[in-house]
Each structure stands twice: as structure tokens, then as C-alpha cells.
Image (cartoon, rainbow, N blue to C red; front, side, top):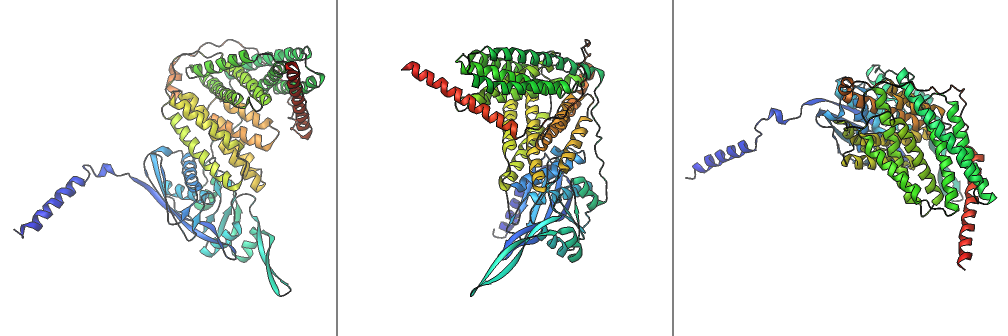
Length: 629
């Protein structure tokens, strides 16, 4: 009996293992696509200052569903996940492969106690490229730099210490972000003060290119994009997407001209009517003078729109002029205690009706698709401003009315773009909203963590979060087209925030050129890409670098979205008969004039106007008080 026990136990064990084993083992595993490892320089703090070290990063790529996993032997900062995701997405886009069909597993091993993510971003992207293509990495090259979602290389710290670390490792070429071959390090100085020895550290600017070549046998090279890094690591020249100035067909030009004609007439009549409305009002001379300064802005925006001729970007300035005129009218009513409820209700109803209709606008051509995208973008922005107006009414009625006026004007522009579109059944958009929301979520979290740690301006990234939340809300309510638009704008704003940080940190304007080139590439993905042309024109017309970056990123994202949607609607668009076009009047061509930047004098005028309106508000309160007495 005792002899049978081992036999019985063995049989039971075999039966148990048989139950645990998968029925179809080969199909139960994810196929490995490739793997690679790379060293990334890092910096850690010691008792005597900072020192450099190297971090080993391994990536394994398998078939999957678009997940990114991190395994570390050190602690990692919260931005490491975002940097790894950005690296995987950028390379996937560069190679024109579907990110959502792969999983990326990163393993990090370092002597540093804590490893930060941003500075290893480009290195991780190089490793992903090697894993996906099977191309071996040149071990004599090292890189440090933050990877942006658009593929540009951002600034990092500790470049001097990192150069020493990679040289000791054996690297012969060290790639650094633009503007960072000049570094500031600190030299220890010991002075005797009486019986004491006082140790201090004095800043010292070093030309890292010269220093590394002379002392470390290391060639330091500045790079601006991932493509440049790949050239040094693999000896390959990654082909850039075709990029050219947007060209619109006769049908597209006719549609744009029709919209501009409507907006021009509307903005002109609104300005003239508001001018009379203000002059005939019972406001004090001081308040009238303050409101005339806003009407002057409306006039200048109107003039600027006319100077842009038939450019789609002219629509923006007509709408801005319309908004400023309406703002003045609302302010007159507010200070004269006239009811505003009917105006607010009317605008709310128009915005809601537009949001309900946009999803079902029918698309028969690329021109129709462009108009639908612009109408949807304007509707989402109008909805945001309407909510913002309600939220700020109690604390700042003047700003609340400004938001209300712009919400109203954006609705007018949206209706102009949509005026030629028929309303029908919403089109199916498989995967587009999900993909853009996923990118928006990871982009926003990555950029927010970077800006939070560096102390950068979070204004744009906060606005990006607003659109991300709007995208998720729209998606949950079944408005997939609108959700895609909101997500694309969220991505663009987050990217612009990071690019502005990079430009500010490095002092390099190379990011402007990269952003514009990518906007051109997006415009070239689809014929008659009016949204890309619209925001590209605004970027070219903007007075400040920050605004240029923002408009270029919006042009790139909405332009790419138009191409992605067009691919999914291609069969439907081709099958539908294109409705006959009515001849439209062409806007007169005007010579363009450069935008006058908003200087100190403009800001002072705005401040004085606000003071005057605040005084008017005080007098209004005082009259009420005396009337009650």
C-alpha cells in the first residue's frame, strides 16, 4: 500500500498539470517582434555635488494591444511611464506601424536611486526603433534628451556630468538637445576666513563641444529631432513625410470664399450697429471711452481679416471682430441694468443645437469633411467658453461677458462652415476616437508631469485637460466625431505647452521650424485640407512664438485627423454623389500686412479700460444704494 502512494501522487500531479496547461499553447502566447538595449546617461547627487552614471534600458516588443510596461531596479519618477509611451508612439508613427497592435516592455537598471524619465526619452525611442526594425545599435553613440510627442528633442539637465559618464563608458559621439553644448557647471572654491576653511561653488560656463573633444575624446553634437538621432545610431536617413504649402482646389476656394463673405458682412454690420448702440447709450463719457477701445480692437481685427484676402485664416479675424463688437454690446446692457437672460438663453440653445447637428453632417468630399471638422472644432470651443462664462460670472462679469461674446461669434462661424452640409445619420468612425483619446490621455499626463517638475507654465496644459475631459464626455454620450475633434485639440495644446518649455529652456527657435514643417506635412496628407491651411495661416500670422507653436500644432493635429477620418470614410465618400456646387462670390484679394504684436501700450490701454469699467460698476452700485436709501 505504501509503495502505491508515490505512484498515485505522480498520477494526480500529472492530471493537475494537464488541467493547468493551456489547451492551445502556441496561440496563447504573444509573438515577440524584437528586442534591444541601450545605455542612457543619468545624473545623481553625491556629497560633493552631482555625478554622472549610465542606465541600462532594455525594451521587448511583442504583438499586443498598445500597452507600455515598465520594470525597474531603481525607483522611477512619474514621468518615466509617459516618456516611454511617447517614445513608443513616436517611433510607431515614424515607421508607419499601428501602435495599438504592439506591447512594449521596458526594463531599467541603474546605479542611481531614482531614475527620471524625460532625459531618457530619445534613448528609449532609439531602442524601440532597433527592436521594431531589427537594426543593431551603434554602441559608440550615446544620447540624452527629452522626447516630445511630435518627435522633437527637448532639454535636460546635467549634460556636463552625463558627457563624462558616457565617455567613461566608451562612447565616442554624444548627442545633446539644441542649445545645450554650452553648459554651466560649478567649480569648488575654498577660501580661508580666519581659522576656518569656507567652501563655495562658483558658476562656470563651459563649451562642452571643445571641452569634451579636448579632455574626453568625445564628439558632442546637437540634434533637434529623433530622425537626426537615428542617423547617428543606425546610419539611416528616415524619409520625411511630404510637406508642401497647402493647395486648395477651385471647389475648396469657392467654399472658403462663401464662408468669408458671410463672416465679413456679419462682422461689418455688427461693428457699425454696436458703434451706434454705444454712442446712443446712457453710459458715462468715461465708460464710453473705455468701451471704444474694445471697439477699436474689433475694427483692427476686421481690417486684419480683409488684409488676408481669401486665406481661410481670415475667418478667425472676422470672428474675433464680431466677438469684440458683441462684447461691447453686452457690456452696455450690463452697465445699464438691461436683462441679459434672453441673450444667454439664445446662445445656449444655438450651441446645443449645433452640437446635436454636427455629428450627423453628411460628407461627400474632402471639402465637406474639412467644413465639418472646422464646424465641430468651433462648436466644441463655443461650448467650453459658454461653460467658462457661467463659471466666472459671479467673480468677474466683464470676463464672463467676453467669453459669452466669443461663444456666440464662434457659433456664427461654425454655422457658416456648416451651411452647405446636409444633416443625416452620423458616420461610423471605427477606432479613430479611441485612438485619439488614448493619445490625448498619455500626452497630457506626460506633459503635465514634466511641466510640474520643471516649474513651467501650465496654462496650455490645463486647457488641454479641459478638452480631454470634453472628449471623454462626448465619447461616452455617443458623439464620436466631436470626441475625436476635442481629443485632437487636447493633444495639440499639450504638445504646444511642452514645445514652449523646450524653446524657453534652450533659447532655440528650431522648434518653430519643426512645428511648421509638421503642419505642412499634415496639410499634405489630404487634398483640400482646409483645417490645416486655416491654422497654418494663423501660425504664420501670429505675432508671438508661443502662439505660432500653438497654431502649428493645432494645424498638424486637425490636419492629420482629417486624413485619418478620410481613410475611414473613403468608400462612403466615393460612393455618394457629390452635390452640385453653386457659384460663390470671391473675396477681393488684399495685400497682407504683418500683425502688430500686443505690446505694453496695448496692455496699458486694456488696464485703463478695465479700471474705467470698474469705476462704472462702482457708480452703478452706489446709485442703487442711494436709491434704496
